[in-house]
Every structure is written in structure tokens, then in C-alpha cells.
Image 1 (tube, rainbow, N blue to C red):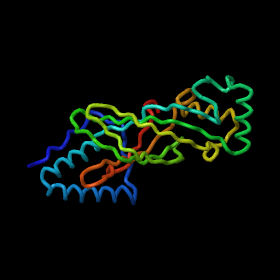
Image 2: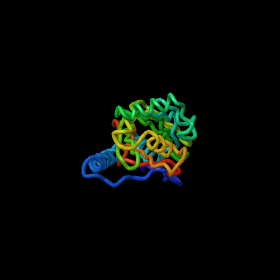
Image 3: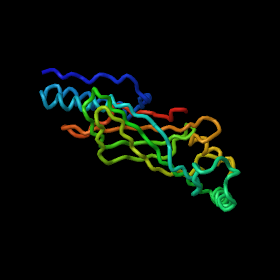
Image 4: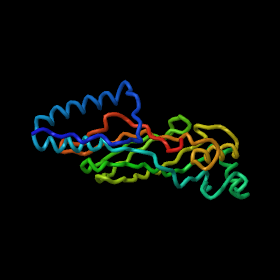
Length: 219
């Protein structure tokens, strides 16, 4: 019995990154080996191929940013540096002088599974945050998430970056830089995520064939 592969979605918000010399090529090779094995397994293999195809047709997107805090200042509550209180301004300047300026973000990753797909089980997703094209921090979503057919599932990633590890400037300049990353003012934000999803099948966890780079809609 032949397996019918799931059709490709009409749009995708995820942009594949070029293959590197190491992991993506290895992942692709493993995927080809698994696919060849599944073709010999009959009905069970067909179901697993459909699960794998379902994840590859899921459109991943970076839908927004929330909980934007710079040295404890809620950036969503201020329109500009002039709105910062004296206490907050002093704390911000002190953080810059000390060389430790934490930026806390919660990133919202959307996973749209087309109606033509079967449900997909996302069991892991490695991610790396880029600010102004600079690689900053990385993490991993290790919980299982069911991506229902025909629905958009939001995965929240909470992270913290020491801004001074990657950018220079005084308190006011760094404040405005963060506002631009958050889409609150200034130039269009230059914030991106690189993600590598992993789907669970009867043969075990299978990684997406290559990392995806996703950006904010207005970046």
C-alpha cells in the first residue's frame, strides 16, 4: 500500500537556513535512512511517514514578543527614555556601569499545522536568539506539544540576555535599542530565532531536516 504524502501548505513563514558542514547534513542523511526503512514497514511505516511529513509541513513563525524588561523596567509601559522614573533611570545607569544589563524577553513562536496534515507531536525544539544578526543565547523546549491539524499552536520561550555582552552605548542609547528590538519605536526590529524542531514517531525522535530562521512580521 502506497503512502500518500501530505500536500505542502499554501504559505510558510519559516525560511530554511543554508546547510552547515556538520549537523544539517547529518540530520538529512539520517532522515533519508529512516525514510528508506519506513518504506519497507507497510502500514505502520506509512503512519510514521505521515507524522514526519506533517511536521515538515508545519509553518513556524515568530509572532511576537512580550515581557520585555530591561534591568527590571517594563518596556511596554514607557513611550521613551523621558518616561523613565528617576529611580529607574539611576538603576539603569548603575547596571550599565556595572557591566550587567539584563534584558528579559518572552518570545511567541507560532506553529501552524495545515488542515490537510495529521496531528504532529513536537517533542523538542532547540532555539537560538539573534539580535541585530548577532547570536546571543540558546535554549531548548523539552516538553511534548501536540500540534493539532488545522490549528495554530503558540510556544512561549522565556529568555534573558546580558545586553552589554553584545552591544555598547550609554543607558539612553541601549534603552532605545531595546525599544527597537521590541517593535516599540525607532528602526524596524532586527530580532530573529533559529529553531530546530523534533517530531516523535514509532521509530523514535526525528529532527527537522534543517534549522529554520524565523523573524518578526515587520522586521
